[in-house]
Image 1 (cartoon, rainbow, N blue to C red):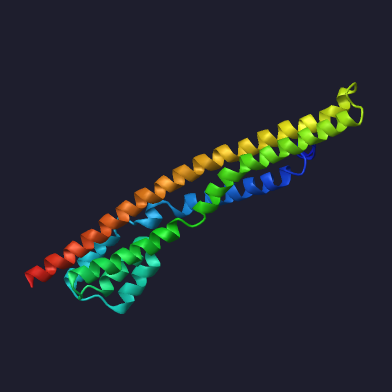
Image 2: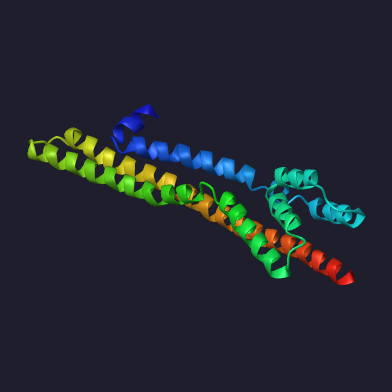
Length: 204
């Protein structure tokens, strides 16, 4: 492995750095974007039962904020439950945008890695070709061994860049789709709580 890295030339080091970052981001976001962590199934039913039993306290709102991303949105909805419907919706939408922004964390970096990794491989290709032509200019046309260094650098760096870019792009697309799906479900849960408030106000 070390020989391949050396043969790939200086472009291999930023490619390796990109691969480490891509793996770290993918693992961290895969763990953070689990549905059970973002949208606990029993959170909204429990909150409804609590509100039907009596008014919610500040401790309940604080516990919601610490619970999950969904809890943060529901805590905002709970804090503005006595305001007009339009103001409720506006505040909940603002909270939702903030939560989705947090779910998006590091995804732009992962997308950037997927974009620049093949370019780094191309840079290694260019430097390898330059080495090969330099060897030719120095009289290595009859000695293939003197050309092999530049050719190896070009091929290895290109392959390494693609090996990093393809999985990083797949992970980015998958995680982006995961965030979009969770955002829709967050909106649905928040709307259900707002509808609950509206129904309760109408009964009163």
